Image (cartoon, rainbow, N blue to C red; front, top):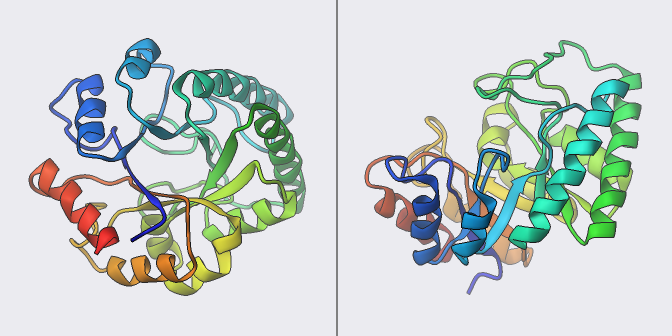
Length: 259
């Protein structure tokens, strides 16, 4: 029996339903629920669903490296922490920079300087202190720049791992997204084993297409075996589209990680 929790991103499944109904469907199927931008959601209605929320956006604007943008990031992180308390949501997700509605960097970066690395570490340390005080964990997600998020700094899993290890706080962990890592780096099992102590959440979808596990090239059953071997006890979340029927897609995801 797996020791980790299975969760589903409500932004990407049951798309014909109103958002609250998506959350209810996911919850009834026995999964945790993840959301993106909380600012466009009815928080009271989300609370009333009784769903278990495992992750949500930890910021609304700003970035890790520019002083003016850092102030915006920290301010919106404070707001996010207050919403997370209402939702009883333990995880708040971050990216290497602010993203627009299409997932593209608000301010694309071609070259990440040493000064930017140092500033990002300082900012993440501040966020970790905020999270620790609130009893929450910020997670820094790796992204791919080849297909979905060109121009994003600190995008690779090796980048997020380096930053998380440099901050060295229980309130800052990796959100290891294996879909993005397969596109950007590959060698997923070695990456997972190397990163395991720093991982706070794992997100999954298959390549190509970003559909549910079992539809593409990633051997998610092998990934599941490794998670059991290392006794991973965090969240494994489907952040992908449903290829075919939504319920069948979610059961395919469950089967990959529960067999």
